[in-house]
Length: 266
Length: 278
Image (cartoon, rainbow over the protein chains, first blue to last red):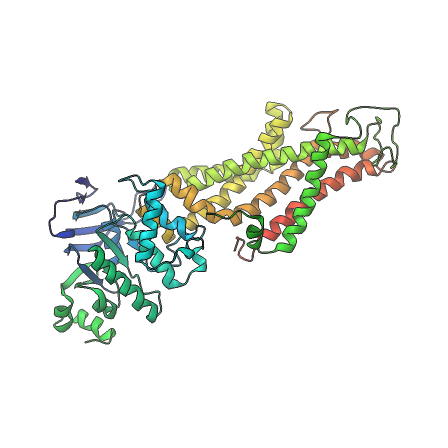
């Protein structure tokens, strides 16, 4: 296990001993400081996350919902180990997770071909070395899993459709055989038919690899389609969490009811 | 896997007509230089009694006031000018891109300091800066290269810095950093290729400025020393005989014009509306 203690006394641990879970977050408080300019001290601290605790079980998809600015992206950044100023514990059963971003037009390097993009996670894997043959075999295997044809390897991202791009982005995220990834609004930028296909793909990966996921979305309908459990956040706090069925049937907070109504469910 | 076939690369150039016109002119100048390396009609420094001859079969561009063949001197001089311009670009663009990319990526106090220094360098015209450098370290072709190269660093540093800053907040860079890609690789493998359109057209423009600066400096008598020719120096020497042997000025002048024109057209051709390669 690799344990890092960050500023403000937070603990970030990979390969932690948390049996049954892929991720455990305990009492997480994240602060942002106004960016320091030269010869100036940073501004006052603003608290973005307040006492956030939850866990993602092994092989579970946890949906994370809330309006923009509620701390969803801060939470995902903290879990990825980018945010260094926090208090509380982030325990990961595996390596630092990779992310699937919302906009597949921005998350793939426009100057590189698909084949190169798929290979990059393996070339830069610090936990093990992959030989050229192993890399080729692995990218073929994953490409087949995410249904990206080998004829696309020679293309640039600009020559792919939105759905194909998101498949490539997902392929990159699962290339190192992780047990847990973060999907940050992975289907919000896609049109409805493609959304369905990508969700189906995530679901099948979840089943075949036993992949756990933190699935961030503002659309409760999408969450309903793919998640096992859901967590609702507002203004940096967790309002409620539970199985999708429970939360959707008996929302305990007014805010959850608003979200459900907005999605046309409640 | 990357296709480097000329046809495939050319297909991605936004304005092919301009680019090709520029490439033809540039190849013409390069051909002149290469022929000059293998064969020249006369020794460029050999004097003879045939002083101030006009255009003739024996001397296609005539002779100067010391009886030296101007065509041979133009061939030799364009070699020097091209060499200095290339060296200047290598130093200026190399250092500039490196400095700009690294300071832009890390930001912070180092970035502030380096950028204020380049602002300072910007305040001096590049020729003046080169003059100071040459008067400190002596006048030689190599020193002129370094002097102009250093004078060219700020403009490249600015461009690459702003491009790196534009790119470093994009998702694909964040993604690479999440994957644990090392900073050097992020800068040079992930970000730099996305700047190539902007950098390429800046290189072309920079090259033009380098040719003109070198010509300007040698016109002022700095750089390669007589009897060895450089284009600017030939023009400077020939100005008093302009009305006797016009080709003594027009010959080297034409080569300078062609060099600059060729690279300008190529640079223009590479630029699409947004200023980067499609």
